[in-house]
Image 1: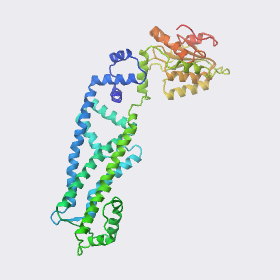
Image 2: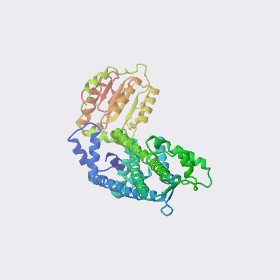
Image 3: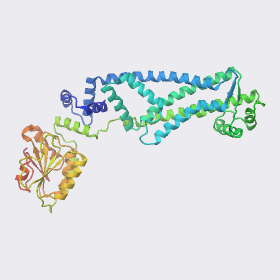
Image 4: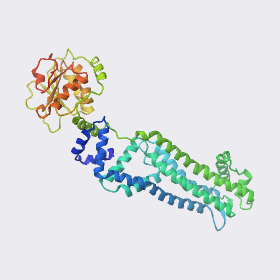
Length: 460
């Protein structure tokens, strides 16, 4: 739900004032307010009903595909048995039963090994997912957002190829079970002649292929045809007797079980195990700018509080000291101001350099590099009074401390902020352990009007 709401809001924010007021009544640590907001907005859009419908229809779609695989299994069994001549070419039968299976299994394994190709394998699984999404989620913006959100979460948790593979392996397992059952029934109730034949290839190669394929089934207890039986099966003039035919029949069934059914069962088990180990990773990337901006909005509604006062106080002693050799021109640095606010302001005193930082990692790095080049004797960081200080603000101040002779924090548009919003800033400086080295001013202009040695204001 959370990721789907993010994708829906990529086309424009949803109206959420009533939801935010509801969340403000029961404060929770991040990121749970963002998750609760998304769930409340999702209920308004009817997303939970779509997800519930998809959850109910997914097994039915899988059963429908399983019915098709049953028919395919019966078709495979019928294709390898010549009902008229009652003759079975064992090599052609194995190619028909295991060819497509082996190719699709190799594609799935290759998709696991190649990064970024998680959707390339498991054709049956992708068909199941597509049919479920189209029948349950719908074709509108909300349905597309739910499908994309689910796929994105699965890819981020590296679970998408395993989930699609699980559906595919289960369908193939059912198909092989039906094919083996039909093959056993045909061989048990009617008499067939098993052999092999070729026109272009060397018969010795066929004999070696049969011997190689018999190695693993033989280790699991299935009969293994000897060299004489293999030669006789390939010679129409010397058809093996009933005992030899039984050995060839069990060899054929053993190859289908060992090289067809068993790998699919093992792969399905591996998919279940990987799902159990990684399912805890199914969560959005809360480090994305969308979630950070949303959390800042939610924090602005909550009263300021100290999360770890003891840790913050312990950090104060490890703060870098202002640069005593920094004597450059004073600098006014805007941090995370609204885009619509003009910058630099018209009332900046002459001789003061200005810079603006949007709060991104690249923006902070650029600001730090520029301040390091200027080495100002006084640096005033201007922040929006109505905003909420966060770790990004603290990190920037700590990085700027050793680059300027004196560091000040001033507010912008303080007259438009409430008393609680203005009081949040000096209290946050105190809690973060920065109050002793960063001077606070209720208006950013005061940062250039006071001596550098002035201590922090005690009133906002």
